[in-house]
Amino acid sequence: MESDENGLAGHKSPSTVELMAVKNQKKSYTSPIVRSNDNTEPRVGSHDVEVVDADGISKSRAYFMVFVLLFINLLNYMDRFTIAGVLVDIMSYYKISNSDGGLIQTVFIISYMIFSPIFGYLGDRYNRKYIMGGGIALWSLLTLSGSFVGKDYFWLFLLIRGLVGIGEASYSTIAPTIIADMFVKGTRTRMLMFFYFAIPVGSGLGYVVGANLAKAFGAWQWALRFTPALGIICVILIFIVLKEPPRGHAEGGSHLHNSSYLEDLKELAKTKSFVLSTLGFTCVAFVTGALALWAPTYMFNAIKAQGQDADEGNIAFIFGGITVAAGFIGVALGAEASRRYKRINPRADPLVCAFGLMMCMPFLFFGLWLSEYHIPASWALIFFGETFLCLNWSIIADILLYVVIPTRRSTAEAVQILVSHALGDAGSPYLIGVIADVLAEKSPVDARSSPSVKSSTLRNAFYITPFVCVIGGAFFLATALVIQKDRERAEKITKDLEVVKESNSIIFIFCEQLSLRLKVGIDAANINGGIDNPNLNIGENETITVAAPDRNNVL
Image (tube, rainbow, N blue to C red; front, side, top):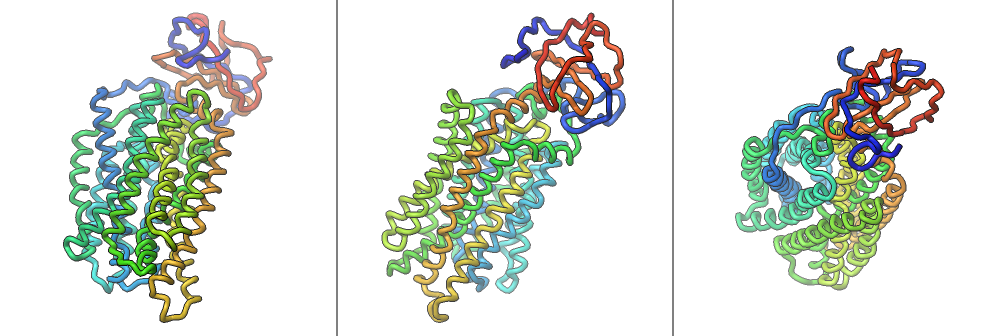
């Protein structure tokens, strides 16, 4: 039988069912069958056996919680990219090279990605509100302390920027899963769209606010003293406004229970659409990281190389404005395009992501090329390139949330952060700086510090980013081939509609449409009046849906 959208086809007035058939019983607890912590309440399909009543979260409160999460995410990215807005001043203050300048962002990302799996594990198992509050307080204090490091202690400044990544990892891995536990389908897509507005908008504000605060107070350190004050406000909002929703509640998966961390990782590795979309997102992170740190510095030198006056604050303002505008337009267009296209094509999400990256490539390439001759035209092309690059931000998050079951989502977020940053923006700023330094060595020593050499070497290093866009587009096209199957499987596990064969055991799980109370007898040997057919043939890993018989005929 086929299952309809809300329950089981042909299943009228379902009753709570206690049923399990075992054929050639053999111990095998590979996911999604999980051994219970005790012998009396086994779990199947990574589910708890009893529905958990959700704490009441009103519609208005849910929307306000999204607003608070958006505000915190905005501050998160403002803090992250404030450094880029004053990078020229920092490099001058510490007397460091391009590669060392790129290292500032790299150490932050390395710390961020290393600690993400830890917070992913905690976020799937403990109260997410307290984890986020503690993390935000930590990065606020560390950001403030970094502004007081003397010019002879660049190593200490690097260390503090690295530790800031720990605090930010605690938020980024958890916040999207809270949204997922309150909304589904089109509403979830829209809420994620609003949440991910913070990436380009916060990044752009980081350039603008950082550079202009440094200019107003006459020292770059003041750029790092603005966001910590707002960070404390965010901590207060988290503890007052946020309420922890039961994991999977919005999808009827409140009964789900955690499996082991190793098992979670194995299941994620077997989810092809998660793996492929993560690799596609890695390419997005590579390009974004390189542009975010080096684009203002590059345009500063490109303008000066043409004999024009260049002001770092003004350039940061222009680039920040472009990033904000491109982010608003790109994120909104991407989310709306995927939502509408999904009505006729269930593979819409990865296809829109692929389209965005493929279209970003030519605009980015020619924007770099034209910067040598015509700055305004270069700014325009960079704007269109960033707009297409931003099409995918909320869509990628949505893909992860619907191909991964609720009790693994924080872990999945953490794994995606780890991989995308390890192979993406953890290395791309440093790589761009290293390539630029190597190319600069071909010039005479006395000319290496000139704006013309600095701009040409950075431009040539930047040319690798358009080709990374093409690779990312290919990964998203591959995702489109498998995403429908992965999504359907995740939905069935979440709603307890799975029938799974593990090794030589046949497990039948029956459920109600709304209220589920499932009791599984692993050691059941005799079933009267239920399903008792030793000739029933189910292929390895094959999934079917069945209707529940009358409870009185089962036990």
